Length: 84
Image (cartoon, rainbow, N blue to C red):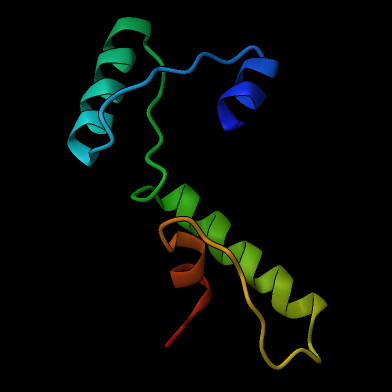
């Protein structure tokens, strides 16, 4: 489903083994071949800042909310949203 959405935006999907090492190696290979910039989905200050901004916007818009549930992939947004 996500692959179809990426293709719908003229993106290219590169499949690899489902391991962190394989993903990192594949990204490095594509970066070297194309000159593209690699932005880590979990270890980049810009990504982390965006996740923190998302949490601030949520808090501003839902001030009366005392608790909530959020579906998160590997926890990046969840951890960026929890100060303690």
